[in-house]
Length: 163
Image 1 (cartoon, rainbow, N blue to C red):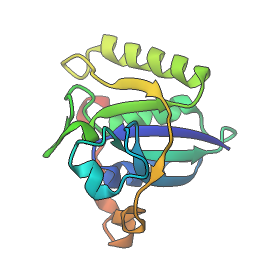
Image 2: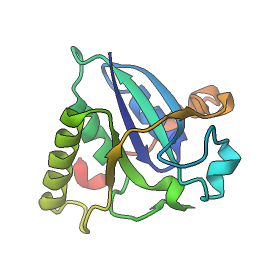
Image 3: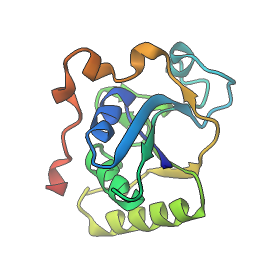
Image 4: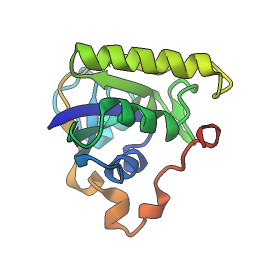
């Protein structure tokens, strides 16, 4: 099994989208990329911890590829808005790909360049690509949030330009 980690706004909807993808074995909502050790949701919401809300995806590379997960990442959010997704504002909602190795970095950079050059988003992509650091799992009530509330249909819509 392999891991991939993505920040694309509020982790509830991001997790729901990746949970539904073929080849995804598991997901976890959490925080990555900050300076505070073992942050809580409240810590991250202040915007002072430096963490992004993110989803750690465990996937079977015999069923799906990292590239396919990148494709989904681009479809489920607006990668052109800095520190914002929909009504959520702050660095904790930034668009980010946290890479676990050099192959992922190369794939992420190539994918970002191709998406940017396609022009389909109508503005430059601001997604950060950073090394994966310690991933802190969010509190249990955040895990599979939509699913627990019977709201799986509330997962983010596929970005209209990608249809």
